[in-house]
Length: 199
Image: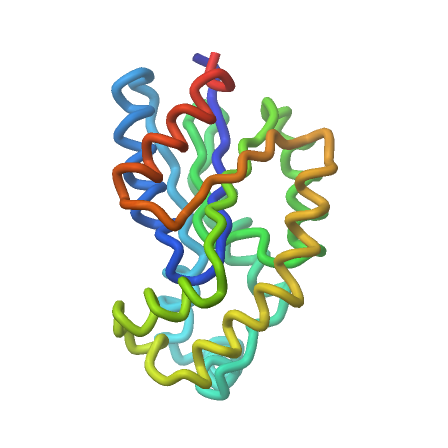
């Protein structure tokens, strides 16, 4: 199996992280090459802990419950890619390409690294389902209906156009998964959908 690139996208609370880890375990049984896992949200949470000027400005954006600027979002995953990717690992992205400019930029990554078609795994859940899961999860950045509403608004305004681009681009294999199932059922649907693309 040649190195593969997987990009998990979906509304907040859809289970991207869980499903990414499950697919990593599945892939590791078929292919013993190393994995580079890049979680943009985690990168941001670490970034705003620091005291630099840019870090403080980013923290202010976070405190206002606003969307981080696109250039910073791209920096989070490009930095991790440049620092860790040797060309031999399987790549997993969780929470990247949340806007049309990000998706267009990633197309240049595919071409630069001569990656085989990246596999976009869109875990599709309704807004109502996402709201319920976020309230149940109770993470600090999920507290309050107003905060959650803003995040879900960003998805509809910024991420849906990115998904349309990724679906139409010749650089990606696009897979839609019904996320409103049990964790095990979602994982099985992902395995069934990406299996034919792994050879």
